Every structure is written in C-alpha cells, then in structure tokens.
Length: 106
Image 1 (tube, rainbow, N blue to C red):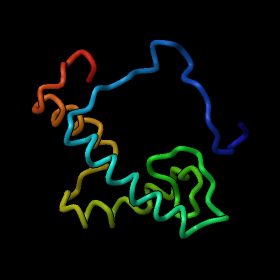
Image 2: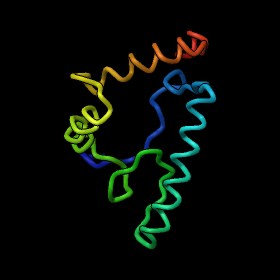
Image 3: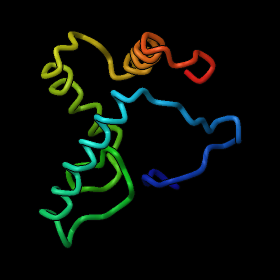
C-alpha cells in the first residue's frame, strides 16, 4: 500500500483469531460504543465509519506514529508507570487468564 494506512485480511487463515472476552470487557466495549455514537453525531457529516473501536481524532484509522506519541500521556493517566505499548499484549494475556479465559485462545 506504499506507506498508506489501509485494511487488509491477515496473510494466512491461522493469523486470524476470535478471542472470547469476559463480560467485564464486553460491558466496557458497549459503553465505549455508546460514547462513540454521541461523538459520531457531534462530528456529522465528517464522521468516517470504518467500524473501528479506537479511531484517530479525525475518526480515521490511527497512524501508528500518532499512537506511539500519545502513549506516554495515556500511560501516565492510567497509572501504568513505564509500561511500553507492546507490553499491553502480555498484560492482556495475564488478565484474561486471571478471568479464566481458556489459555489456548490467548
């Protein structure tokens, strides 16, 4: 895609996974979706609906560099110390295992 952000299917079927989420996560995502609906109405007609959970401030796919730049403020607000963004992947696994999500899907 020559440096452009875009949507693409995973390279192999084995790269695509469905991860069961505990009710706590589902509830948080539903609440987030409700907030997004309000944001969408405020941003109309500029809203670009890509069905993204976390779009950019311009409501488009988030540029990786922008996410990295904003991570420090997000991390500080959440009290996550010096945690790197990549560390969230490992934290997610630990938290899901604590909530009894089967290990083979984590």
